Amino acid sequence: MEQKFTLNNGNQEIEAGACNRNSRHMLPVTDWLYDLPENVNESDLVEIQFKNTRKGYFHNSAHLPLKKGDKVAVEANPGHDIGEVTLTGKLVTLQMQKNHIDLTRYEIRNIYRLATEQDLQKCKEAKAKEQQTMIRARQLAKDLQLQMKIGDVEYQGDGTKAIFYYIADERVDFRQLIKVYAETFRVRIEMKQIGARQEAGRIGGTGPCGRELCCSTWLTQFRSVSTAAPRLQNISLNPQKLAGQCAKLKCCLNFEVPVYEDATRDFPDRRIELLTQDGTWYFFSADPLKRELTYSSAPGKPANLHTITPEQANEIIELNSKGKKPYTLGGKETTAEAVEAMPDYRNVVGQDDLTRFDRKQGDPRGRDNRRGTDPGNKRSPKNNNHRRDDE
Image (cartoon, rainbow, N blue to C red):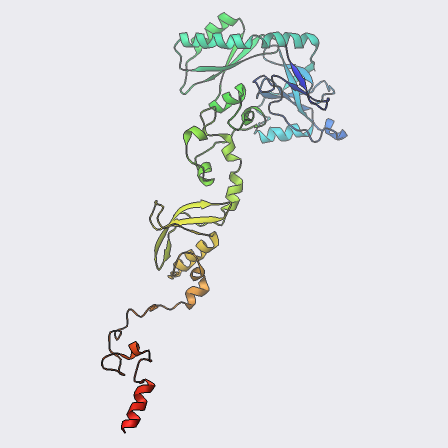
């Protein structure tokens, strides 16, 4: 029996099975043109959703007053199927273009009628057999020693056909399996191969974030996820943390990639080395949101780390292209004006003076500094007075 819980405001209800694979709220579509009068006559195409992620497009040849959420009986091969209206009007053609559906090759069937109580009851009886059929189908495939996994089973609304969704790494010859299924279940059999991501979307579940899986709720298209996405976001490449329930890279790794791409648009190439007068610096890490670049004095090692901004790094690269080197990495000496004004040679403490060990001319024994007088030919006032008395 389906249980429902009422919220405190008294006007909303939550289904107990809203987070399982039979949820009717998966892959919602917002029809933001539904209240326009001209939208009804814009197109007779209607988008119909069946179990989980399976959708189809049908002609409303009978011009039924359909709206989102209506249960309808549609043409199938063979018999008929029961689905739910998710989109009508002009947005249907736009949705078909988005999904790259070619109208010249796609067979568009018709909508028969609004589903009656008898249709809904027959559909409910057929759906009730799906779980037991899937368990039995897995056992039969195992008995035939086929390297495949039955991920889900979907019965047609009239119960005359069943779609078996399977996963396989290699090509599988299931001709004998179809014969066994037909004799066991007494229905028309259709085999459809799906990937690991599609299986997770059909089965559903809860992710490590505590929310229902995106692929089973709102994610309508699967995009390939590469290891470049976590690298761009400075996420540790830990397979156990990056993999989802489908054992593939999580789809949510792609969600913030455009933000990081915009933030790193003016970042220099990580392979470029920065040349300064105190050594060569190699890229170590980056923080796009803080706009910080960290460079190391040793390639691939955290040695003498220095953090600068992308503007400073680009300025150093420009100076290096002109054959110039800033004095150090970061600070005022990295600006172009400071490099232009910087002398080619700088004697900081006079350690390279050739006469630094010569004695001063004022005192042959070099005692002027010890008496506290100025070096050179100058004598102390006391010595000058003594000479005048002798003279």
